[in-house]
Length: 293
Image (tube, rainbow, N blue to C red; front, side, top):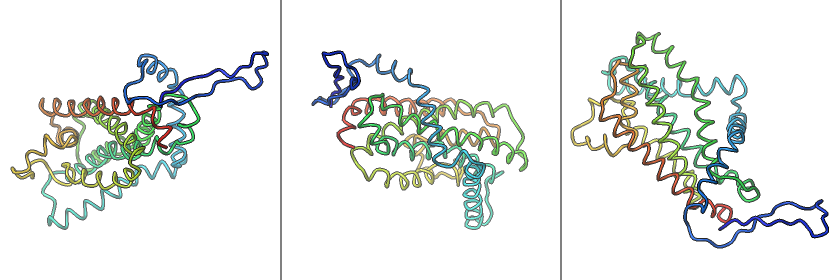
């Protein structure tokens, strides 16, 4: 639906009931007609984005010490469960510094998992705001991703402490983790755009995402190392967008290995492709959200 702003101010000059209302007219799917103005408005509302992210954190009780502590305890407890499970099944993990390796992959993958989960419900969960307020709807998934990152950042500090406790010493390769996190963030943002749009049209998307993320988790080298991947599954390195990202992060953080050039290229291509495609899909369907919700 195309949005048209109509002034309701009466001819007598009495502006008590004056203001703008919005009429939605039929339209063909496509990018907004004034794309530059759209992004200018998006930037103008950056404080709104920050407040939305803060409100999301508070809604999840992250403004309390208990809530903040849980964001750290949750992956720690899950890491302990996986550690015991893999150790028992494998009769002793064969991966060096396995616990730190496991926690590194777990914390890193949580960026994608949390962003995707919250991004999926970001638009459909703000139904009243979408139908009654004129603003760039792109703010909604962006706020979801920002809140996810704000909650997970303390986990990086905990991960560093764990690494030192278990004998992993700081290395120059740790600096590679910064751009790897940024690439994961770009990829997660693109996924949030795609999934939030899908949720508007297919309401079961939010129920499907947890299962997809669980399968995705096991398809990444978190509970196992890259060297354990059978040759017949080598195609997963290219087909799985998060494979090289997770493998590179864990290797850089735990073993002091700087990511290979191929890993940077493949990961960047996946990340920016997801961002561009997700952004295009979202913008071309945004004006239809008010009708679908």
